[in-house]
Image (cartoon, rainbow, N blue to C red):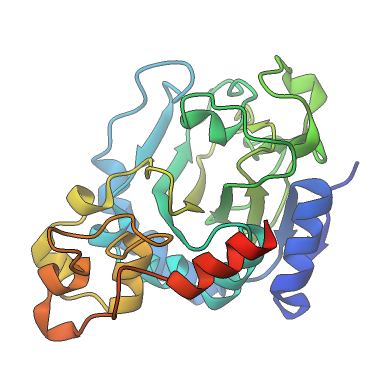
Length: 286
């Protein structure tokens, strides 16, 4: 099954439709070349300072650089990109709210073998979520071209509907090839894995993922981004990072205070525990 390619003009609804059907889609030409060059320049020192992985899953020739909210102002723009957030909201529509789950540059060096095929939602202690109940929506922004030769992410379209805990091989997958500036969207239930890099150059992408706010974040955003930096960030980004009351009553501080009130009192707070009306709506739907 081919991977559908869309344009930014197709909008978040088309992306969500493709993910509901196939579990993945590529949106081409989201990041303009000048902005991509700025990102590469901003991230280069952090990538160089990152040691390679220590096991076969992380990749012994792969550098995984996190903490991007604190380290990269330009990555903050990608995290809060309106097209992405609207698509994520449509994919994770069963949840009252969602939050940032992971930020990571993945730089796959020459000679790296293919990663084992897996589901990202296995990070939640291998809990068997019901088929069709998506709790995670992911993006990989291509900073370099993604080709079969240089280790493009390999996916199995439609596998988000497969049984859980299957042992699948690279032969079952196909490469998510795209030009630099494109974005691969895929759900947490999709079987996938990084491809083998048989080229002489490093394949680099930015993995930004989102999850229902009743699930723990893979990357601890509160420690990855120091409080002194967090206090300078806009409130919508802080809420996306987790400085919010998820669902109705998750994540408040002491006497049901809004986390923003603790971090930055002058920013103002919401009334009540959380999104009570939306939680009620969700209950009615179920």
